Length: 143
Image (cartoon, rainbow, N blue to C red; front, side, top):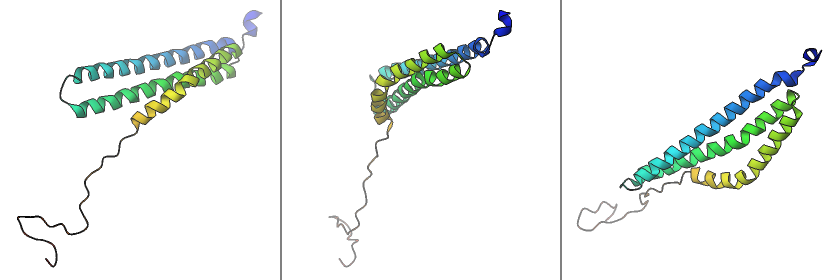
């Protein structure tokens, strides 16, 4: 009789388990990306390549931002899926986990987001009026 009563909760366990494995795998990959970029930064910091260091700093910020988004989005996605599959306690745990991770991650994500904003490069603008140069031709009209 117990086998006949098995509802969506028993069938939903493997689905939620797969989502948890995907979430943990994504977090692990993002953390490995961040650490490897940090090691590259450490290696380049002893050289004379300032452009490379700026690119690596951007990549490290991007990897950290992706890890933070995954950390919050994983439980936020798993909670409604678990609730839909009638795993109410599991849904409650992942909902609380999403909130607990999101509260400290939000200010940190804003800070990392500022590092991802490209700094506008200022290029010298040609003057719109006549500028005379000494020692050569005067290319100004009328002079």
